[in-house]
Image 1 (cartoon, rainbow, N blue to C red):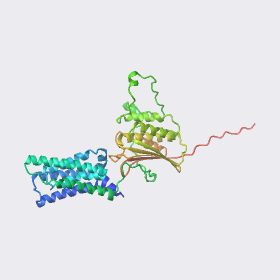
Image 2 (cartoon, one colour; image 1 turned 90 degrees about the horizontal axis):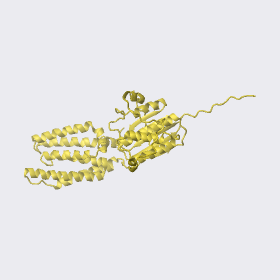
Image 3 (cartoon, one colour; image 1 turned 90 degrees about the vertical axis):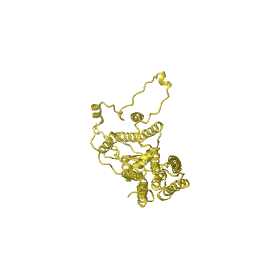
Image 4 (spheres, one colour; image 1 turned 60 degrees about the vertical axis):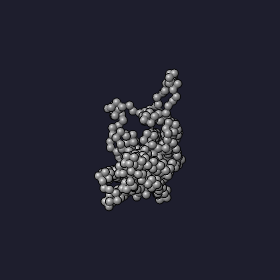
Length: 393
């Protein structure tokens, strides 16, 4: 069963409910004659109904979208105030609907963003009132309610966020992963192996952990020596993946390889990665080590390129007869609800690798945003050395 935060904030339940209630209030206002049922007002009423329908159908992806692009809130508020402007800049019938633009900043980002959003809302509203009176030649309407109402409305939703729903702090440290709650994903569709794709399309492949890193030239030209080393830009996903592979390709110790991977990731990206250990380390087979390192590399590259995250945590656990690796971030989550997107072949191929090693791989979305990648492999006892037969003289 979903918690209140997921239902009312992440799935936009409060925002959708209020906007439909404001639309119903506008219909009632026009029906009883409290506002003139002009053609313009009827068109605006229909437009609001279409906007509400769109928000209702896209409610589960609205919050991740706003977290990734907060500037969309500015367009939402401007559109709502333009509806009020074209209806005559009066409080009824559409001003209560316009106030809905202040709900998401308060619920999703807290009181600081709510204050900023309220200030912008009031400023734009007063500017549109001035433009409306200038065009119509009428007297200025009472301005005190247009200042007090947004402040009181925004404060109400800040109190709802703080005292009733108790959302998590987005800047708090990431919690420890709950290994028992993960479930394996269904087997993805069959895809062509990387070697066959290269033969078919001529695509270059990133070096695997079995390959040695290419040696860099020892002599640099004057132009190269004069230019400082630049961090890889965010679109250069293949470059980041190759350099991370190269940093651990020759490392035989699994724990040392993870530390080098963390140092390289923190040096070349803006995301802060933390490494945790649970349980005493145990020896791994080379194929298990390569598979887990490849998973960690692909997950970290995805975090840097797609998650819009501030922090991530990688947990290595040796508990019982299994080794588990968990990578989680505080980013925007899975925007389309799944990692099985066209062109995303790395995690699909890794799912097959873990299945061949009798392990499991799962990719899930946390309740309050962010993605968790969890992998488990069984620990197999080391084979005893062969015993030589005794030779008698």
